[in-house]
Length: 141
Image (cartoon, rainbow, N blue to C red; front, side):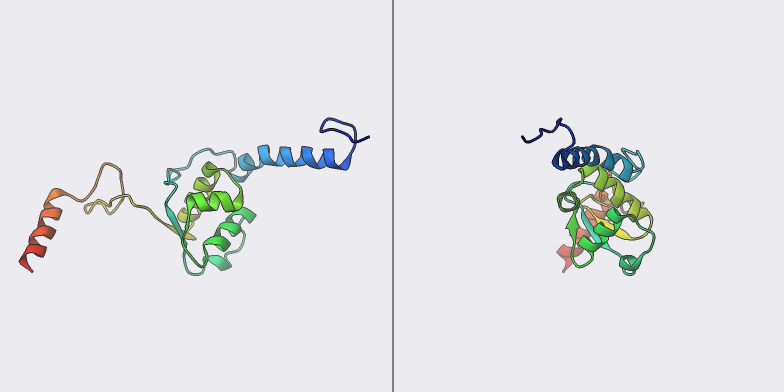
């Protein structure tokens, strides 16, 4: 007689219980309990690029090594990494943000860059005077 998920002692039941425990506990452990980081508001479509020399980095967690492996030869989005690694988007965002701070990755977003600060922000874009100068320069051609 087969045992169910709560049945006694079958190998399948133990494997199912381990898989459930891994799926529910692991993301918390991967991020060290963090649910946010300073740069973890990355959009789903942000593209991850591995910086030269990062693939040979030592001391990285298996998840970070997997991110480097998937992004080593082409740009990969945050959403794609989440699907490939079978980890929640929030976990991938934190890992990618950490790796960006550590100098392993660069992240390309469609966020406009402020010409005065050089940083992206949803409320800061190119100033009107810069856009007018560009338009004047194009018109002069």
